[in-house]
Length: 109
Image (cartoon, rainbow, N blue to C red; front, top):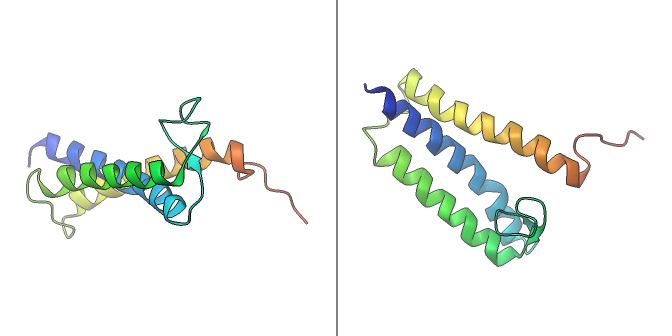
């Protein structure tokens, strides 16, 4: 399998995991940070913008995972590439957005 298939699956994992908080926040009617906010990635975007951004992330994930090569979830290398992308963006998001929502330093009762 060409190495760029694994790179595409890794990128697909990034976009797939990134779609989740945008879609969930948007569907709940809550504002959330997005690249379109002022300042970018720090300010809040409307719920509608977040649903659209989450949908765009899903489309990109689909293209990278389903239209590049023949992705097989039972193939350990391909699953690891996808999971690695999902884990990386999830960790980044937890640290980045934790600054704004108290997740980096939770208050203990």
